[in-house]
Image (cartoon, rainbow, N blue to C red; front, top):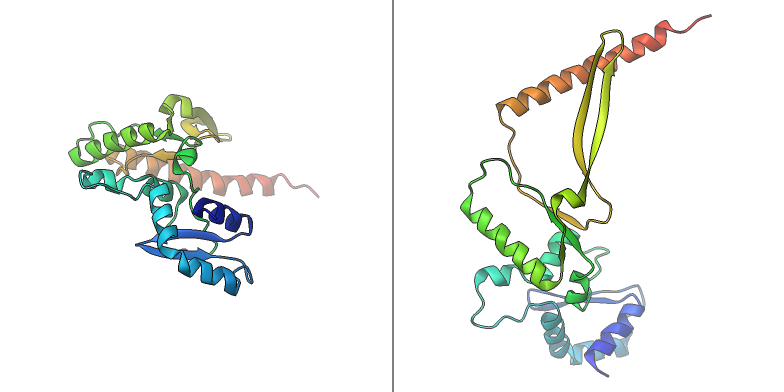
Length: 215
């Protein structure tokens, strides 16, 4: 039996196999790993590891750069899927055909903060976008991946009303890639004012509700 057929059969039984630092990891329901299956996996371990590493884009020739290695399809899939080595419970391995997985993904890049000048991040961002496109991932422009949302905030009797506009990510977007930015002095002031207004509003509403009760 071919390795691909073996893994497909195991997947139907809920048995998941993946590689981790050159080791074969297994996640299976209780009783799924029979002595016969265990012996077969042990016998074909090297063959299975080679297949999984090749399928997940881990096979790297000597001409590959460090950037290319760090941006393998397996790495990208783990980042988008939120996988980390510390959370193995319930983990399902990546799709055996990573390029098929990539073609199902829609990713958008959040616009960089105004005046952003970190050269390393800018270079990595360009490399990541290029690698995603070449792998078959659909890169959706920020304007198409989001929609404008408006929230009205009003304090009764004070004739104060403010409409807050933001952009919400559409449901069909698989991942948003951006950089963490620290708010400047003006942004911090706006946050402070908004928090104080909300506190005032939240205290004012119960008073209105109480005063409206009649007996």
